[in-house]
Each structure stands twice: as structure tokens, then as C-alpha cells.
Length: 156
Image (cartoon, one colour):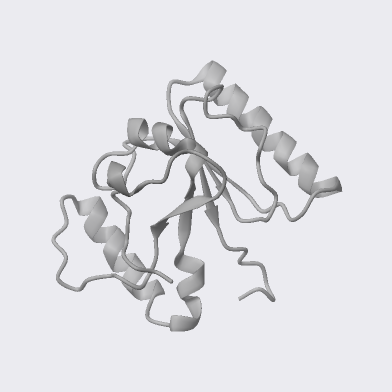
């Protein structure tokens, strides 16, 4: 269950690095009266309120931080839960095999390229079940891996 939006994570709330994920974002705790530190946060709140009007869609507003990337997250994200600038890519790989493995390989190569050719961080949002174990936060210090639910047709 969603017990509070953790867009701005507190270090004490984050589990030690390891498998799994830390819930960053969800509908259950949106506050109508919440004060926003930035225009970005206010816009984000407005968009989330629109999405969260329908309780059937709440699961699709949940976003988790892969806990292996907690240290990278705190280096890159500001206190309001936003990064100043970053590359963004998504992946919807299901279980192991063919297309899923090819997609994961392409994402790994993109992450490598960004780390070689850019000083900006890269955020990978994984909408699939495939664990991206070959993305190591020690090798990719400007990488954040987030998890979200599959939103393909028939899944909603």
C-alpha cells in the first residue's frame, strides 16, 4: 500500500542497497494543501492529482527506485525530487529471452555511451519484469534505475 509520497526521499527512510525497490511516488498520500518548494513540484502535484482521480489508475502512478542506485539518486536528485537535467530512456522488457534481452542490451549500451560522451545523468525507467542486473551503480555513477508497472494494453 501507498503510505506517502517519497518524491523527496529522506536518507533515513531508504533501505540499505540491495535488490528490490523503494517506493518513491504513489497516489495515496497526495495532499491538496501541500506547499511546493518549486514550480516543478507544483506542476508535478497537479499532474498527479489528475492521474489519481481514478483509483483504478493508482497502481500505474507508483514508481520505485532500484535500491542499488540510492547513492546515485542522492548525488543527482535535488531535495524536491527533481534532477536539474538528465537523459531519460524507458524499457518495457518482460521476462528473459529474445526481445527482452535485446532491449536490455540496447539500454546498457546507451548508458555506456552517455557515461562516455556526456556529463549529464541518465534515468532508466523499467516498465517490465526483467531485472537489469548488468547495470551496476559503481560502473555507472550517473545512472538511476526506476521501476514502474507495465501499462501496455490489456494490463490497465
